[in-house]
Image (tube, rainbow, N blue to C red; front, side):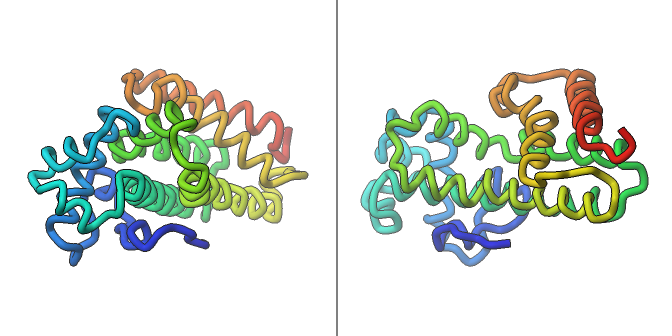
Length: 229
């Protein structure tokens, strides 16, 4: 898959641990501490209210040390956002491959896929806190940064889902006139059905309710695109 992120983002490991603050082995220790602190403070305070002083205090480094690694607050925010977006997109791509490459029962496999995707709201909790910040403060964040995040995260995941919708149509599992639209609908009816009312995992939702929402979403999706509808 195409990766159009910054060098910092490209260096992020493609593991769930990246969402919790682990950075690629070999990065300078202080840079790791700065990135970890930035995720915490940006996620808690938002972009506008966060100061470099607060990040420095959280990281246990000087303000000068932060500027030795990052040109300014926006570059630091971009680095941690793209690192998380890249890791989430890569993880969700692997989830898709695991559940959708070999279909045994289409409905069951789509439900299992949807439920494991929803788990990323917990696994990558710090990244989703940054997503909440982006959505709340979009007018105060540069268009270039917003575009880079969209490309590294949401659009990359959409490309992966579109690939699988095309594959399902070719296998005769679905009737899909427009794979990109089908991908958008599956995402809306399953992942976003849980992510949006919980504010990307900030407000707990009972597991039973999550299972119900994902199952109902898959049922609605198959009612539109199922080959035997």
